[in-house]
Image 1 (cartoon, helix red, strand yellow):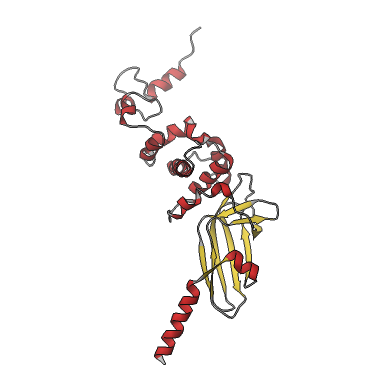
Image 2 (cartoon, helix red, strand yellow; image 1 turned 180 degrees about the vertical axis):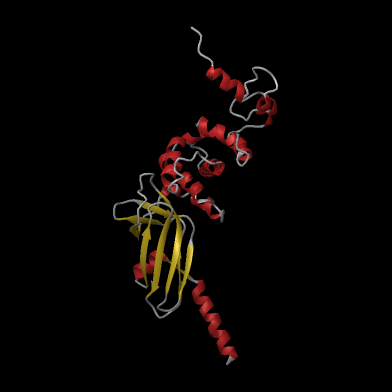
Length: 264
């Protein structure tokens, strides 16, 4: 009896291990799916097994879900859902919008029959990052899809922040996420430098940010020698920060110059 139970358990494990692609399961009508998303960073899915056999349904990273209004979201991390015979499973998928024009409203989704070829080099890099922040992935996708700049990205961040925090300045974590997004894009498509890489506002923020400075120096091709030669994009040295000499271009001196009236 015990031997029979072990054989049955091994058989079930074997069946569950053979994942069926979500698209194939939907086409064969062995699975029913209810999909809804917020147009931006998440989607909810309920899968129902319509057969008398256990099965595993695989929703791959890179799958595109589309709303009735044509707005698309892409799956950032794959999901293997184990379904008992005639059973159900619920999951929340990490997503990203494929357009910065996507509205942040809940809507019904369906699987798109087409992938997005522009993301083909990028998505495999995400698969190696289990703790990848969604804003990092989102900005990288916007860079690939729209060549998004820093001003447009900060507008997106403002619009997606919780109520009461929309007007907060860009945080050090958000700057570090932007640097990582640029790095992913550079690794995936090195022959096409994005516009954001040349943005001086982000460059200065990144190089002054202790969370991102090392990566930023590598991203911008800078070294310690650049610090010694006085690259204005790099952080000021301690003498400047502490205002040790007159007219040393420290923050105090710069502010004083702005306050002085211009001479005729």
